[in-house]
Structures are given as C-alpha cells and as structure tokens.
Image 1: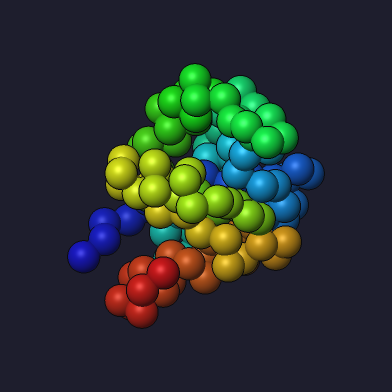
Image 2: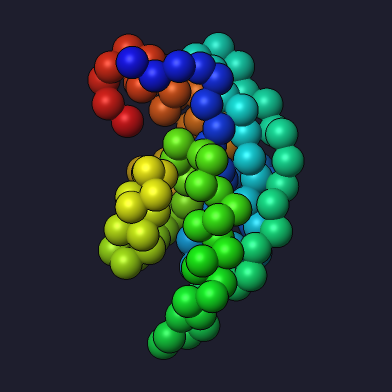
Length: 119
C-alpha cells in the first residue's frame, strides 16, 4: 500500500500542462501529492539530456539524481532507454497525461494509486 503524500516530478514548458519531452526538460517541478491535495514544492534545474541524434549521459545521471526521491515523473513523451533507467531507480515514467493540466492529472494518478487501480 502506498503511503501519502508522495512526490511526483513534472516536465512542463509553461507550468500549466504536462508539455515537455523528458529529454528536452531543463527543469522538473516537484509536487507533493495525496489523493485530495497537490502542492508544488520546488523546481529542480537539470542539464539538457537529448542532443538530437545522441544523448548526454552525464546529464542523464544528473536528472536521475535530481528526481530519485519521486515515485513518478510525468512527461509528454519519453523513450525506452530513459524509461528503463528510471525504472532501475524506482521511478515510474508516466506519459498518458501528456498535454493535460498538471494538478488534475496528478490527482487522478494518485487517486488511482490509492484505490489500487494501478497507475
């Protein structure tokens, strides 16, 4: 059973919707979320990971370090490689709420986790 509140990271261009691809994110907004509340705690700056046809592995290490205390990261899109790296540190990659409002999406996710519907 999940204990609340949990921390969730969000990649957003404008701070309103889940609108940034994982590899393009320059920051992650960290929310403390419970089934009935969602609060922005902080914004964590990260180095750009995706560099066109190749990626910056040192940037990936920094991103993983910066969001390792979160249960999940919400992104518009993410590749299989980063998804596996996140899974290895216990962070789920969530892209099914792409381009939807942040707080509504996080509350929906947490309510599904709380009721055992799976996230």
